[in-house]
Image (cartoon, rainbow, N blue to C red):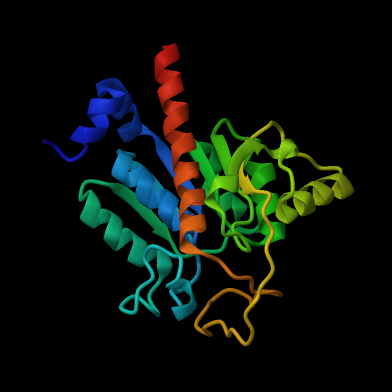
Amino acid sequence: MKLFGRTELLIGTETMRQLAQKRVIVFGVGGVGSWCVESLVRTGIGHITIVDADLVCESNINRQLMATTVTVGQSKVEAMKKRLLEINPELDILALQRIYTEESAEDFHLETYDYIIDAIDSLKDKASLILRATRTDAVFFSSMGAALKSDPTKIKVAEFWKVKGDPLARALRQRFKKQQTFPQHKFRCVFSEEVMHNRGEGVVESNNSLLPAKAQVNGTLAHITAIFGFMLAGLVVEDILKMNEKS
């Protein structure tokens, strides 16, 4: 059976053809984004751009797909690219070791993509990406906070303005209201209302990150970040399936 035979058996030849043609860009290939990207490629997405400026750290190993004791110190996007090409050698992949900011936003040519996926942490940059992505014709999905959670049954999908109990979503909405600048259209998010508290002490992050140090480091679990990522990938596949059914 060919590479994506089991997928084609389920969703059909025409949907597989569309998956192979769609262009997807994923911002952030950490705890959420790395699993999202892997799922998309294993499902048959043919053109993907991955964006992340960071290097693999030891503290990434507990939750990030490409992070192992072998890849520590490597570029996250390059380590991810190598793995993805081992899955599908014909994959059209662009790995950008860059930070998305308002100042660099134009460089990513968001208008050229069919799907834009947000899996970045920075509130300021996340807000900018949401505003810019919703000005394009691309379908946009976003991950809210995946830290401080342990119960996978509480992970949900909702339209951004209907997300409940998530501090990141609340902070984004407050920012948009304060600046009186809003997303141009509705979009769906993966989130969880669960908020735990850190119980451990003395956890030190690895120091080979290229990004600014976080104001606060919160605990995370692999099964939670992976489900967030898989659900984002699922939203893309679901959308393509629905478009195919309509046509």
